[in-house]
Image 1 (tube, helix red, strand yellow):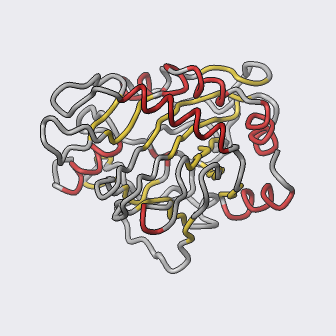
Image 2 (image 1 turned 180 degrees about the horizontal axis):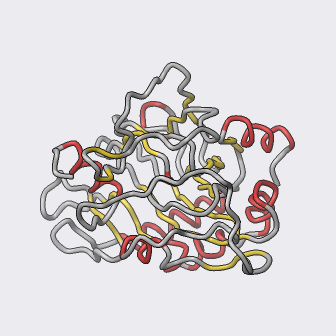
Length: 282
C-alpha cells in the first residue's frame, strides 16, 4: 500500500512516486512476457491490433513503440492488474469500488523512442467525475536521458487545459505550458508512479543507449461514468472490468463542466493524433 506521505502527495500534487513497488523478479517476468509478444514483428509485418511500431525505421525494423492492452491479452500483466497490493493502493485514493480501464506498454527503444507532448489523460475520455488515474511502472532504470516522465504538479484540481484547435481535439495541450515547476519522475526499475487523470505530463525522446519501457495501467472509481461521444468512447471502454468492490448503481457528478473532445477523424493512438496535430492535419 501507499504510505501516508504518498497519499498526501497524490492529493496535493496530483501524483506520487513509489520506488521498489515491484520486485526485480516481477519486472523480469513482465519483460519476458513483452519480449515474447513482440518477437518476430516488423514494421512491414506486425499485428496492428496488438502493437504499434516506431514509424521511422526500415520495413524490416523491429522497434515496437507500444503494446496495446497487455492486461487483457497476456497473463502476467493481467495478474498484475488484479494484484492486491496495487488495488489496495488505488483504493486508498478512490475508495473500495474500482474499475480497470485500460493498459498499454510504451517501449521507448534506445535512440528511437518517440516524444510524448503535454497532455492530460482525461481530455481523451471525459467522465462524470474526476476519479481516474494511471499507474506507470518503470520496467527499466529511468532518468532524463531515456525519457523519464515530466509532470506539472498541483494542476489536477484546476480546469482542464486547452487541447483543441479550430474546434477539433488535438490530443495535446494547445495553450502555452509554463514549465517552471516541472518535476521529473526518475527511478529504478520497479518504480510506480500514481498519476491523476488530470495531471499534465509529457516525456522527451529516448536519446540514451538503453530502452525505457513503461507499463501503464489505468483505473477509475466505479461511479465515474463515461460520457458517450460515439465510436471513440466505445473504443475506450472495450477493456473495462470491475476489479474491486461492486458496480455503481448511479453515476456521481462532481459539478464541474466537462470539455468534450471533438475528433476530426478516428485515430489509432496518442502518437498518431499528436503527430497529425504537429503537421496541422487535425
